[in-house]
Amino acid sequence: MQPTRQNFRVQLWISVLSVVLFLTKIIAYQFTHSLAILTDALESIVNVIAGFIGLFSLYIVTKPRDLDHPYGHGKAEFVSAAVEGGLIVAAGIMIIYETILNFLQESPIEKLDTGLLLVGATAIINYVAGTVCRKVGNRNGSLALQASGKHLQIDTYTTLCIVAGLLIIYFTHIYWLDKVIALAMSIVVIYNGYTIIRSSLAGIMDEADIELLNRFINLLNDKRRENWVDVHNLRVIKYGSLLHIDCHFTLPWYLNINEAHLEIDALAALIRNQFGDAIELFVHTDGCMNFSCPICIKTDCPVRQHPFQERLEWTLENIISNQKHQLGSKA
Image (tube, rainbow, N blue to C red; front, side):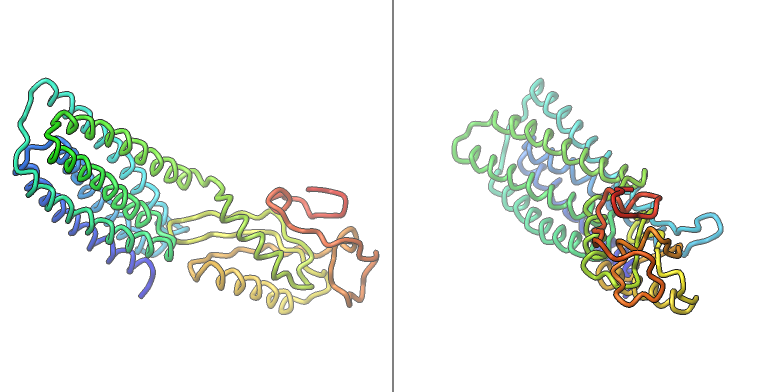
């Protein structure tokens, strides 16, 4: 199954599940009138809305590239994650609002045992669903699925904290703890919403993924071939699950077109073997110059002008430069 279609199917199940879990928490609140359970249910409203927003974004991503979107529709996932993060922050603010209202108008807590069973069951289901969602999202490079999975797991942690607090209330009858738990959870919810917004905006703005770049550079250094004289002007941009990579690739100047193409094919195969098939690779080939000789590792070069002196290791600092590398220069 194609990664984009698999992402869509997983998100569809997550969206349906979020509706079921939301209704379960509402039933638990009706039994207990617990403010802490109400806050959990309010966050689940966000799960429902965000789930269907994520579903729509993944539907958009499956559409092929067109004249208006030559790089495809992958950026829709970043927008979806940003909206989801915003909704999570809104849920945290709603929790604070409901807590303040409850301070002003006291509501008795009832049937905590029934509420605990229902809410505890939603926590277990949420965690399993979130784990599956993040696993598929990481494998397919889907930010929308990763955001959904993270949201479900955060929902699990907050639900477990609420369950723990309700157990204390159940045995101690200290009912004001219900409000304290709700306020504490609101802070956690708002912070996690902020982290999702931050990562999605980074994708929208094409912020460099330093971890991804370092993995890419280490791969090139480890698997470097003799004809790969230099790599520079490297750019890696994420379009949803698609990685768009472009670079300048310096090869021996005397290679013919077919020989140079074989080297590019070897580079593409290396990248796809490590990062998956969702790769779009654009390579500009440069012929080597005399100043490349001291860093060229090719042992049988028939036109070498200067002796080899030192292998240049590509680093994050020098590989993004738009200049051909030479010994004694960082650029």
